[in-house]
Image 1 (cartoon, rainbow, N blue to C red):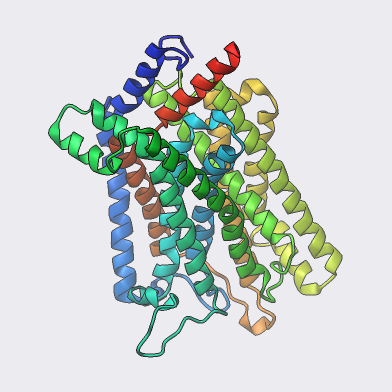
Image 2 (cartoon, one colour):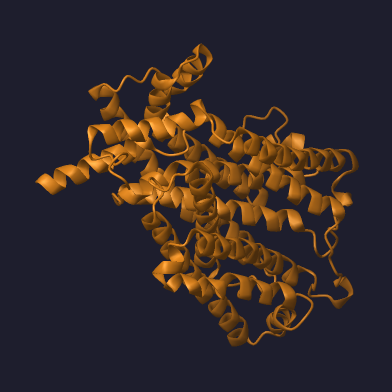
Length: 449
């Protein structure tokens, strides 16, 4: 980080604020942004059309059947919710551990969490068949005496996802209030001043404001960290609590949580390298940040690899014919392409991250992270379908192939994520400027202390 923008000097404090607030106020690369936004909006249009056809025709347009009554929608739901875990881990957990290197990453990582959870949370609603009745899963006062069925995984999803989304939104918003105020003060047009002023909630930087802010920010962090574990543990229990071969494993809760963090850190690394290159943020998102992201991705990846081994051992040790048949389907049967694709993409390129020069290389880190993101999607696909298409009754066996509308909805969900993220970087500060300055001040005090 050059001294011109290093937050250890008064000039550095101003430079950081100007650089971060200047992106939404005087956005660079407008043409490039519009190209990406129109592409994302096109995919979002595909999502809207796919959802409309689903509402009109019903879930029968998907490839679901019996016994595969969970299709690509559930697989994608798990993948999206998993991606959303890294933002909370980077922001909340590292905040409580007082790791200041998070300050350049936490804002857009938290935004990624919100958008990924939104994309994932829509899938169970669309999968209901009557999505306009989704509120029936909530324990609201019902004059018709229709109460939620607490034995249903859909009710578990409702509480887990809604709680996680709500806490993540509050945590992100509270953390961004000081930067909204800085952007308001830098704005030159009346419209921008009003927009960021409303978001800042009257923040003036008074000592009382900072005291209340620190209390609420750390409190929300303390609430958010357990949710990271609980949300994906709940999703794993949807599988492990049933009698389906290939799912009855006690390793599933930690396996799912670590796999979610693995894919989430990979997406954060992709976004960090892309934003760093696009906006010239090398002085704020430094090689140290890339190195730390690489280490986290590597650590979660190796623990996920252990989960693969434990799942394999559980099936072999059980000796149950159904478990062994499911294992064969994954390793050498019709889903071998998904299983070995997940193994290769998740763990072979990952080994490059043992070397610091590869972890700090933006291109290498981006490509490894992209490989992990695809590999984790293949894992979700394999995990769901390799277990369901063979029931206990041979007469119930049936193959499953996703339909066009399932693929289009998935592509559209990527468009929804990209549209939301592009709007975020266009309109709001993507980096926590005040926390970077605060960390620089503490470093300066420690150096002179």
